[in-house]
Image (cartoon, rainbow, N blue to C red):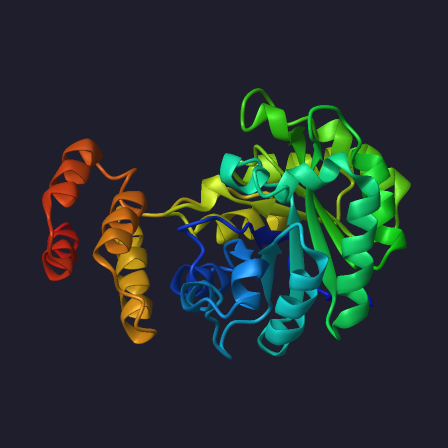
Length: 309
């Protein structure tokens, strides 16, 4: 099944604790071509875990959106994907996460050590669902085998592939090797989404130019900064770098707050974290972060940010 036709080149990466429904909607409002849920355990969904279903909360307003799943169990991935596909535009399997607790389950990037297992999982899930299946990988586990894994993904039913060009053992150390993205693009025909070390709009343009990838995915640079999607789109369209005012940054947090309230996703820890992330580039932000950290009331956090205008 073919991947979606997206209306821009820039996609929001799945990020644990960050890419909940309100944040994803805000990124779509700023021009993200597609968004992903944070990584959700297919094992937990298959067992009916309520908390995992909450991580996969979506809304009809949110289009296009993909559900990212992880597991080493092909049957649980199939069950979770079949169960959830009606609410999503595509399903993504994470084969790139290098977090220890995921690797201990022989999931995420651990799967890159076993190409036959990769083929089995992708075949089973792609055959079971009626929407596109995508896969997110790293360049390898402790050695590079990205081209081999990408070819396996394509040959077994993946509609698109995202690659972060560091090995699992590298984590986020060193530089992302964009030449690996280029090699993968040269060797397969399905759309390639490049990810890694895109900090701003010129970086996005450089990755597209250097690698020939079809789309780029932004993760860490989008935290507290959904405006980056508008910046990238503007830069790709006309080469202009647009800046965001401090008032607009505050307004973005208030919009996030409004959406979190609307979808009943308010929590003290999340609002604290988002308040600190959305205001991190404001004047005297270190003092502001300390003040936010000391507050234990959601309304007081909102009042503090409101008073910055």
